[in-house]
Amino acid sequence: MLVASLLMYDHPDAAQSANDALWAALRDAMRARGLDVPDRLDRREGHESYWLRPDLAFAQTCGYPYVQQLKGRVRLVATPVFRYPGGKGARRASFIVARAEDPARTVADFRGRRVAINDWLSNSGMNLLRVAVAPYAIDGRFFSDVTVTGGHMRSIAAIREGRADIAAIDSITWGLHERHAPETVAGMRIIGETPMGPGLPYITRAATSDAELAAMRESLAAVIAGPENAEPLDTLGLTGIELFSDADYAELEAFDAEARRMGYPKVA
Image (cartoon, rainbow, N blue to C red; front, side):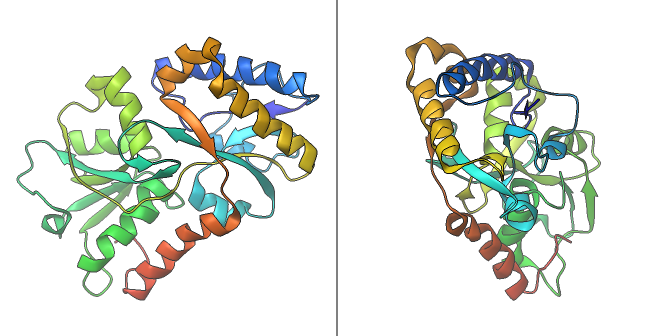
């Protein structure tokens, strides 16, 4: 029995309901093209637990884990395009955020302050932040303290609660919460944006054939173009897909290399 998961943009509650509806449409479109896919999305495990499962039909990963751990071990299906600010097509930046009342106005103003990151393998919360901060680091340091929170909204909570001062937040996560759960980002202010890089790709297991991969892409395009799916697509802000290759995702490795070249190999 195969498994499908869409946990990367599965909150707030409105997004979860929209993902269920989106998957139902994708499931039917994929089955119509001869693909074997599960009835429902699986939410029983953490998002990263699905990526390398041999029974993976469909999931979404972060670009930095893809280039660091998954490349050659899964297949890229497509990268979604969202209408929220902070991106161009399927390329996305992160928003660098702080408390609204914080007197600091630029990234450079936060020297010696405390940062929250969601995960050391996150592109949006760590890798893009690292390359944005690197020009201001001295002897490999910029912040006084680094807190790993386990999630973007937990990083925002850390700032609100006074345990951190600044964080880089995935701009789609920010857009979804600002629209559907504005109270969760209340009191925060965007002080800047990171560079843009390829967004979070949809993936499938490595054993997927070229024909099956083509059918998945056709199904995605058909579902996004279908007016009957307008409501969940509007809720998610999903407007299209782009096909990126490993060469495109190498840009995220280039950000890593650039930060290291500037003497800032780790957010610190």
